[in-house]
Length: 299
Image 1 (tube, rainbow, N blue to C red):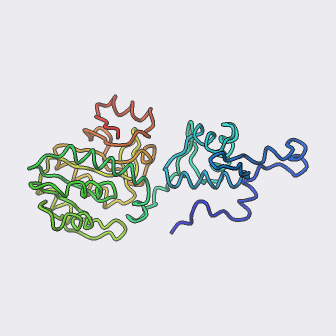
Image 2 (cartoon, rainbow, N blue to C red):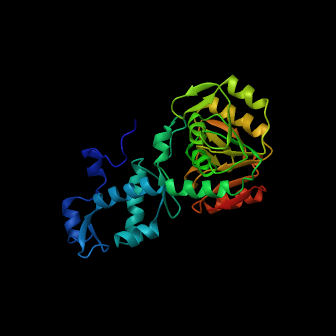
Image 3 (cartoon, helix red, strand yellow):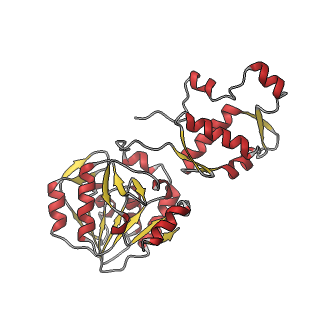
């Protein structure tokens, strides 16, 4: 269990302040530079540097990314000040600095968050992606849904179909579809408790005996040069077989997944026919995908 990014130690708290000595701070700045004013409230409330940086981390946790221009407006301070905040947070490994803003600190290649932890992140984006994905499905088709929070949201969006077969290696997705008219085929295999997914030779062999019209593939990392990746080697092997047996593969992921590499490569971007993501995708990544002939749907 990782500690919250906003839980600084006292030593970190000191480092996150302006870095000036008391004398220099008074000499350069007669009390004004160490505070900003939040104009969202009826009365101007002074916000200390460290408080502002904690608030930035909170926004990053809930939104998945922050922009310099928006933060400057929200905290009624200059973009120069916000850039300095982000640089300090980046130096302490608390955020990943990007052009124009910041993303959550890059996950380690071995980090494998639980499904419940992932469900809290980018919830609204996942719902929009799921709605878009469900709109591409037709009655009578055979789909594959791999494990993950975005594909679980897609499963919920498909509950109203009357003539649909869904192949999945996710126990929780099968449970979501129980009691509906949707026919569910579970791959079998060894249960991964972190993700409620079934992996291993049994899952792979079952998939190789099947065929599907469409695969919705969720990922932990999407580097447009390297490919789609996941922290678990066995999960990656199952995902590769899914791609092999599906006529069309559609990656479904929110924009925070771009620019990340996880431990195990699933497939290169050239193996995809389409990507469904939100409008936060970096423009350079969007251009790169389109240049390789991958269709991109933004929600």
